[in-house]
Length: 103
Image 1 (spheres, rainbow, N blue to C red):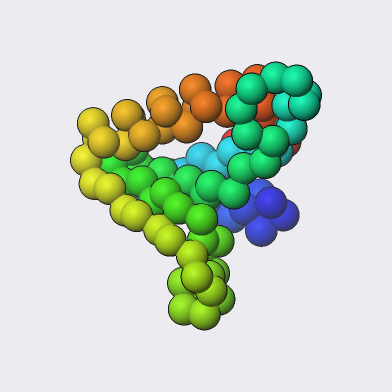
Image 2 (image 1 turned 45 degrees about the horizontal axis):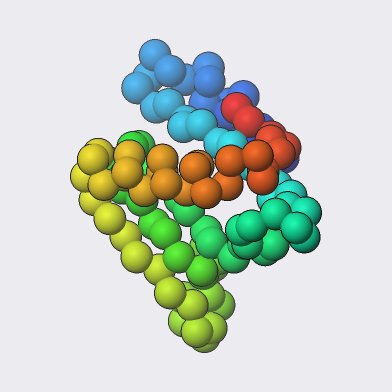
């Protein structure tokens, strides 16, 4: 977050040069109560790029996850696919996440 904030401050001033930095939102998962239905833990990683591509899977965005761990990631392209996946993720996590950081 510290690195993103630095980039955001620097790039925010360069908008007229055509170089804009995208948004970032970090949310923490809150386990639901035992008697409620649904998952107690979530391992999914979801990255949306410009509303045109989504990477969805279990792997972290690092070398170890992609090359040495047994993780799975799927990339989908197209605004409709991204919207459907993102709405599904948001619906599944409704009331189970708490916003930590957003720019």
